[in-house]
Length: 205
Image (cartoon, rainbow, N blue to C red; front, side, top):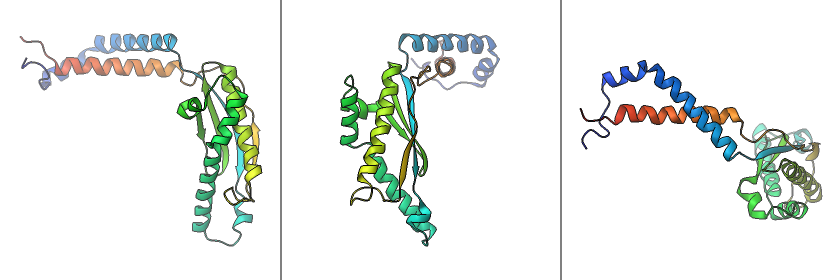
């Protein structure tokens, strides 16, 4: 067993670099395996809705320093995120979409992507494109309603913050991960494993 996992020699490296058939066939086989994975267990569809968030810094902090404005943005952004992921918001989404549960939403079905100020993107993944669109739209709508309801309260966002839904989710035609990604990853993984076997596992001579 001393031949297992022995360090590769210079000759092994040269042989691997010259093995153009290995690279060509390996990439093709890996891509085919990636495509097979994509069609056998396809990724979910992804829909997204957009909410425009304006912190109105000029009104909230008209004569303050940049540092204070930075902390204001960080604090208010954190409040908005907590509202987006609050039980009240997500339970309302569940009530409007009976085929999902609260754990489903918290375990990767919903994704929030946003800058400190600007468009907040509410993503929803589901094997049914219509349901993905419904989840994203409902989530963004309930979020917007809750911001207006809690604005200016003790635990709510600053009263100067303005939010408006600028894009309602449409039923997506594309899945959350493209077929090309599966092809690329399949080829890379197959070639990586093949190179490892060639370089580090030698048959006894």
